[in-house]
Amino acid sequence: METSLERLWHYTQTPEIHSRWDLRFTRIEYLPRTSADEPQHFLYETKIGFGIKVSGKGMTSGSHSKESGESTSALKFWSDEKISLIRTGSGYWKYIPHSKGITFLTWYDYETRHGAPGQWIDRLLFRPLIGWATAWSFDSLRLWLDRDIAPRVSRTLYLLFALANVTIALTWLYHGIVPKLLYMETGELAMMKASGLFGGMETTAVIAVGIGEILFGLAFLFLGRNRFLHYLNIASLLALGCTAFVAKAAIYKAPFNPATTSIGVLALSLMVLAMRPFLPDAGRCLRQPQKKKHVDL
Image 1 (cartoon, rainbow, N blue to C red):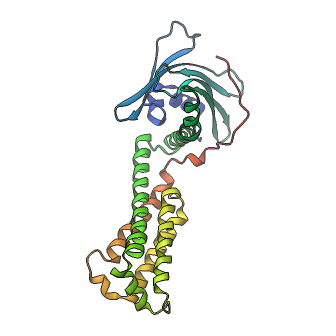
Image 2: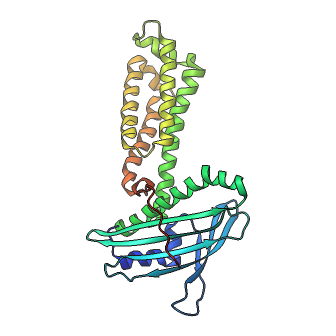
Image 3: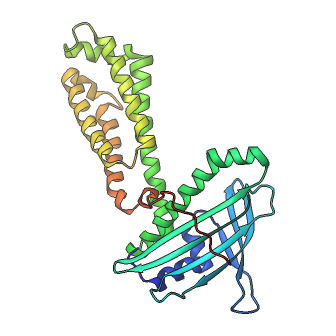
C-alpha cells in the first residue's frame, strides 16, 4: 500500500475505522484496560442477515520494536455462541515498510464447533468465503488509503458492478433459451432462413447459436470482471444487430426490437469497464499459503 506506517496503523487499529472497511465485522469495541502493558480486549459483532448476528470476544497487542519499523499486531478471538462456526482462533497482521509504501500481511486460523458437520461446512463454504472477504476487504482498504475511495463507495460500486453483470447474463441466457431453443418458430428460424447462409441447416444453426448465447451468459456470472469479455459483448451485440438488420430489417420496427435490447446491454458493459479500476478485487491480494508463524500474546 502506498501510504505511511502511521496512517495504515491508525486505519487498522482504530475500531470505528476498522469496522468500516472489513467485511468480516459490523462492530468492534475496545474494552477498558487497567494499564498500557495489558493486552487490549475487545468485543466484535457481525451481522449475517435476516436480523441474525454473531458476536464474540478477543484480545490484541501490538509492537513497534524493530529498528526497520516492521510492526506486528497479534490477536486471539473466540465466541461462546452456538450459532458461531468459529469456536476459537488466532492470527496476526504484519506491517513491513519499504521505499514504495507498506507491505501488509495477515495470517489467521481457527477451530470450528459442531463436530464433523461444522468441519465440512467450514471446508466447503465458510473458509473460502471468509478468505475471499479478507482479501476483498484488504483491497478496499488499499483503495481508501491510496485513492481516497471510501469503503462505502467501494461497496456501492461493487453492487452496481454485480447487478450489471447479472443483468447482462440474464439477457444472454433468455435470448439463448427462450427464442432459440424453446420457441424458435417465433422469428429466429425465419431470420436464419432469410439470410440464406445455412443451406437447410437453419434449425441446427439456431440451436448452436442458442447454446453459445447460454454459455456466454454464464460467463458473465463467473468472469464478469474480465474486460475482454465485455469487449466481446459489445462487439457481439453490434455484429448481431447488423446481422438482424440484413436478414430482416423490418424487425427494427417492432417494439422491444434488437436495437432497444442491445443498446441497454451494451451500455452496461461500458459501465463495468468504467468502474473496474475503482472496484476492490480479492485477486489483487497474494493468497498463496505461506509458512505459518505464531506470534505469542
